[in-house]
Length: 160
Image (tube, rainbow, N blue to C red; front, top):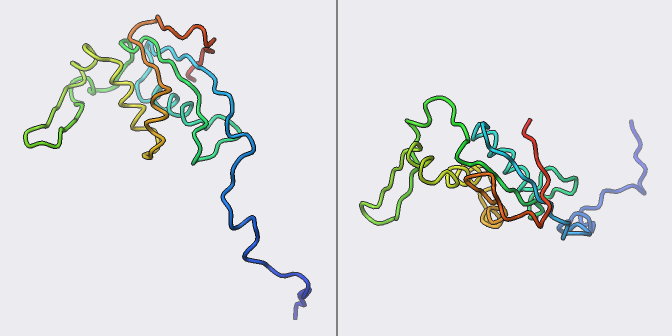
């Protein structure tokens, strides 16, 4: 028979088990990243942008804290959609009123508002919580290569 030391006991109500973990430095500095969307596939671009917005690239990542960086996406009009998505995919929205359904084909959306295509794709890849809207405020999308965020000294981010 195995003998167990009676001085060793498992305590259920230790302070480590009762509290929520809060990092010592919750206000980490947010970096600025620039992603050039020229010739990039929409889904891969959106996945990387969501990864940076959420802060999963940082060693201090905590799922319930908003520690992400700013992301600037340039050349949104030149992003690629694979397959027949340009003809077949539609942007769905509803006003919650009878007859309030709006279906906009992605071909028209890419011509008129290519920024909205990237915002919708990134939004779908973020966590479905109250933090999603806060993270999306740090996403800046521009149709061409010019942007007004030069003072923040953004770093170029290459998609691999």
